[in-house]
Length: 469
Ligand SMILES: Cc1cc2nc3c(=O)[nH]c(=O)nc-3n(C[C@H](O)[C@H](O)[C@H](O)COP(=O)(O)OP(=O)(O)OC[C@H]3O[C@@H](n4cnc5c(N)ncnc54)[C@H](O)[C@@H]3O)c2cc1C
Image 1 (cartoon, rainbow, N blue to C red):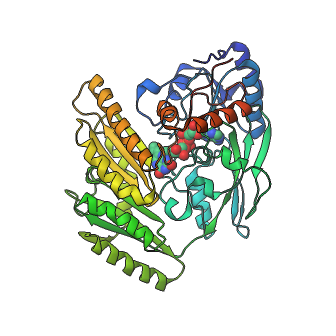
Image 2: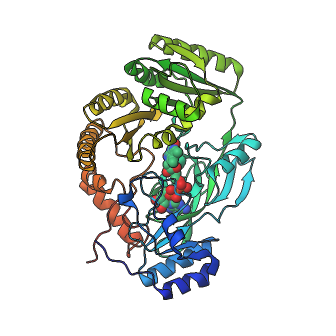
Image 3: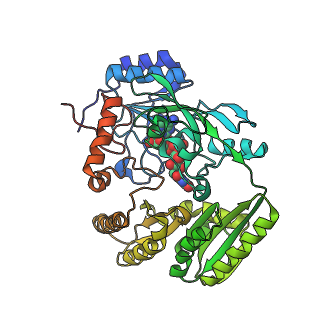
């Protein structure tokens, strides 16, 4: 394991000189607060030695210079909603908060872009765009709490990715503090560009291992005035999942196609205190369609209803806000059912999503734990929430490992990957090493080593640091 230097009194003093005394915390309560993120497994928790809150790009740059000088690791942190232990300080050191950098610098309606600091909440970006008759299309289910810097670092997906793509597709440029403390802007507000490497896209999705994003210019799109959400209820999981590729192929260009199995329908309905149709035995597909004229919407709705019926839907209803409330509460709803649980974020080609959900749900039935499944089905991304039941810790670990290996092997055979949107974080590092092509892995480590020779920026995420030679 790579060794880092501890945060000494001298380091704390140097950090205080940069950001001010009140933004450097070493008290036990603060350190305890930042030892975890939304992942509930305590075996991953690590205490930082100091928590620093930066107020500007210049301060972030100086913190990185100090970290290099003293050989102390830095973990950038936005809202800490990571479910893959991304915001946990694996090697202790400095947790660097970006939440004070929360200004929307510009909204340009004519050019359809917005310039935001990294600490702006995603929902505030969405709301401001909406007020101006525009849309910011990044839409993770955690949007009311997560920050745009965290979304960019993880290339967050969410509800609108089928039509608009993930966070990386919503970006013109990013301002970045590199691991050596230098500041640069990567990308430009251009429709096309063939000038050198696409370094903005290298930084986006790198989970804070290659640079700290401090500002971004985000694309906005026209807000489609006509929109309808449909809830297709199925009492047969195979039929519910078979709908997805048919919808995609029908040219409806849906904004979202979300799938929930009956375990999630029940738990999220209970949690939300709402009873939706077929609570006892239904699986749900929620499909959103947006258009720019009414006739087109009517036409698409007719086609959508016909496809749902053809696929064997028991009910096809207009989905009101209650349906989305249930969908948004899925993750939270399982927390009261078991304190020990883990989530998977597998992604497969869209044409394989139906087969994949069916096969893995069937496979999971052989184990003693409970598996809840939901999917951003229209982009091939499935989440399994796996809950420990009445079983020993050792048995839980053994069965989980066995299920994971079967599932990962199967997903890779389908052409899929370990994570569609949550990232590798610290949680999936060992599997990343195991399932990634060794040449690709070596290339990633070479890039990391070239940009961060001291391996001080978010070490232990995506892959383990290379030992000092
Ligand atoms: C209820 C719930 C629903 C969710 N739904 C979705 C969903 O639909 N889609 C989805 O993709 N995810 C979802 N997530 C996961 C999570 O919200 C996303 O990964 C989100 O993008 C993380 O943002 P954050 O601000 O919380 O970042 P953090 O958790 O603080 O950080 C995430 C990672 O980014 C790094 N990082 C943070 N800020 C920066 C920065 N400025 N520069 C460089 N690196 C940085 C951190 O080191 C860490 O590795 C959900 C989580 C919860 C709890």
